Image (cartoon, rainbow, N blue to C red):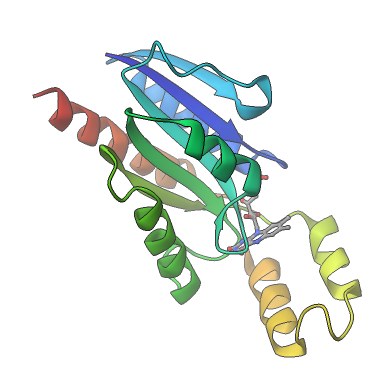
Length: 171
Ligand SMILES: Cc1cc2nc3c(=O)[nH]c(=O)nc-3n(C[C@H](O)[C@H](O)[C@H](O)COP(=O)(O)O)c2cc1C
């Protein structure tokens, strides 16, 4: 089958995840990988794996918009985020991705940790009062400071998850 991996990445975490998925799948399927900024054409592909960094609990805006343009394709979603995947926030994010795949031919969803850019943390610290409530801001800073890059093993797990789901689909 012909598959297309599309990713949206600002600081490299999601790009790394996309590349690992590509590396694992390319021996089994005919794969192409594209940055979302290159406005990829999806028509000729049998399945799409769409990935993004998490912004306010869901896929960042550009990717959400792109998702709406994908019609009648087998589709999987992947993402990286500052919170740990098994945290309460991580579980919420998974639920949001599941909801985005409702009524679609789903290849599943997978999230990995991603280091939050230190510049972003500095910006967060600078936000005052009314924009973000104090408690939420403190929680976001705490989570961001604890964030880390995904391990090779975690990325490999993500890639194998999609490899399995695609295999199941082919049978
Ligand atoms: C504006 C902004 C909003 C974010 N919102 C969240 C969020 O809601 N939850 C979370 O866990 N991480 C959040 N993050 C952290 C990123 O999703 C995370 O660091 C991700 O791995 C970045 O991916 P990239 O390196 O591919 O750009 C946010 C980061 C930014 C810059």
